[in-house]
Length: 123
Length: 370
Image (cartoon, rainbow over all chains, first blue to last red; front, side):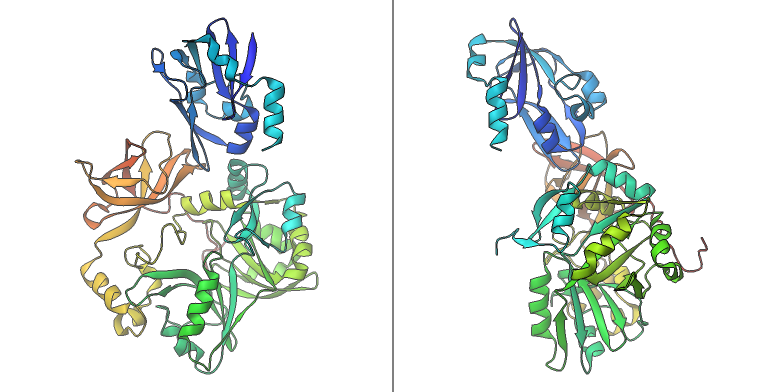
């Protein structure tokens, strides 16, 4: 199992052809207190780079884009019910959705933890 | 100087306290310290310290100053007693709002506080529209703090017990630890509290004294915005601008009785007509269904999807734990209880008109006891 990152500050935990997607601790820190989350329903097909979820803090609304394409197998209902999980546990209980990868090669374009850390340090 | 190039007198103080600084009104300003929700709740439960030194503090004086200001403001300055801040507005000839402000008679002059983002334009406009005999001094060396919340009086009273004598919308001069201040019992959160004008060179010592009180924490601009939204208080540049009139903005309380009848101020013709016949639209509060905030820029739409109004402020109310907004709606749809449809990013949200404030004011009014 490996974890990858995007320049949009999403993390993607890949296990076989199943990926779990969320936003990083850096992202939640930038957003501030999250008050609303919308996640995709199971069965929805997401194109890579397409709008997948919505996260709203007290300050502003942000879209979460699909870092990889595929079919959603689960949206995190616990997160919808308690959006503050994004702040308290962004890379654990605060995951957004799980997706069955349409093309496992897409993960090759993502950053690893070290590359992502270097990317954040430049922000 | 760049848009965010001006530094507040407390710039280093904010950074020491861990503030996240953002550009606002031409200044680097603290948007938050520990987090907007926590700061919002702290202010509602205890006392929050806000640095609002970006606001413009003006002294206006000279022969005929009262009459000269009455030509520009819809307030009854002839009736205005010493040390009583009054909410008023600068108006265009067409009744549009140039800025909203507080004006206080202090001896032979008037003390005026205007918005930070608009102060340079206000000063230029005032100087261009006041007679030669009246002089305007921009008090650039003066800082402004606000201490707001149910425990503000207890905290400030420990430093200057005499503030207990102030009631809502009264002010006076006080000395705190040798620092000369002007304090009014007023604010922008809906809570009891104070606004404290002090020399920029002494404001850090004053801020430290206030922060030493156990009731007090520093509060950023983020919570200032969510607090004023819950209190139903409009923000210039968002809920008020050159295209909105005081009647449309539901600020008719600021139009003094004598002035409404006799006029003699800019914009009176249109304002008198709107008072008599009703405005075409009105600023109202909207409680939004569900949990997702509807923000500034969203449209108010009719059942066919046509634009009939707009949201001018919106966000998540930490106190109500629900989304709330201010919007301009057609006057026929402005009554509390009326259903409202809002369009944002291609989606329709529903809600209903509700009276403002969304969260009750808790001012320390005269005669209200403790």
